[in-house]
Image (cartoon, rainbow, N blue to C red; front, side):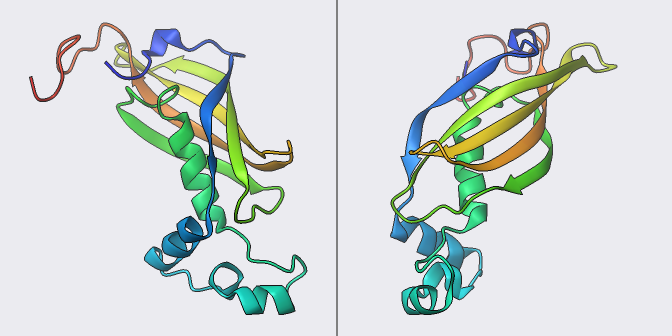
Length: 160
């Protein structure tokens, strides 16, 4: 099965998620348009070069967040019952087309729920560009089953 059980998380543990992801112009343009975010900072090169402090288009911050969350799935929420909460999403620096982002997560807290067969895991993820610049941080609370909680039976795939 994919992902970790609740018992596999240790407070203080740090995980580097691999691989990184280089964000292209096409990624940013399509994501912005699909989300109906037509801010010229993301889709208008002339505007961004002429009228902004950065002199180039900025990658949509929600795209950076979405990719960063995706990078953590195999290590954090691959076996999750639910992602319960995202909090403290902070943008520290801009991301531009051609930048590669990497993520690292620290386990801040684990707590068994009243049902006793699952628990919540609070993590904080740091997102950095290829040059080490921190561009984003966020926290996530995930509901994760214990080994004793079997919804499909250990080792079975949904199609079995």
